Structures are given as C-alpha cells and as structure tokens.
Length: 133
Image (cartoon, rainbow, N blue to C red; front, side, top):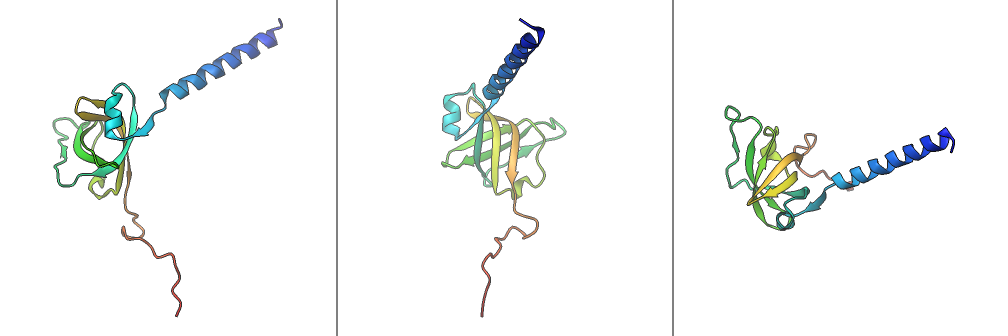
C-alpha cells in the first residue's frame, strides 16, 4: 500500500471515532419522571420556575450552587440544584431548560437556558394584525 492510502485510512478512522464520540455525548429532552428512570444519562428538561417555593442562592457560602423548584411541562415538580451562579433576571423567565442528571430526588443541573420576556415589547405579546378602519 502507498503512504497516501494509509494516511487516508487513518483520517477516515479518526473521523468515524469523532462521530461516535459526538453521538455518545448528546442528551435528549425528557421530563423529570423519565430522567429519574435513567439517572446515569444526561437530559434536557423543559419547564417553569415554581415561584411559590423559595429559591436559595448564597454566594458567600458557595457561589456555584443555586437551588430552586421547577415544574416540567407534564406537571411534575422537582428540586433543582444548579452548579453555576444564579442567572440574571431568573425570576422573570417564562420558560427554563435545565441540562443535567437526576440524583435521588434532586435534579443536578450543569447548565441552564432561559426564555425571558422580550425587552423590546415589555413582555407583552405584540400585535401582528394590522387594524383597518
């Protein structure tokens, strides 16, 4: 075999390995009940903040721990421990996506994504239809 063929085979093998590694690290969307069934897997859980329960963030104790309660889209409530600092305007968020794993009765989140009201329309839905007289 020529050196070009060997180099080509090595490059293809590296590409295949990279693809399998990427596929293995992807997480899926689930609710808290599904995440509890597979605690070793990482999931994205979509829901809303339960504003009736207290959120705890004590930066003097540990700036990388923020605890709150969230209700997923199927109505299941769970305590969430986010291993990051408290996001700005967290209480104003309309929808939350947390990324992490279940550990016992708590969801251990490594990252968070928030959908907040638009600052351009003050959180009110915009009118899309034109009014005609």
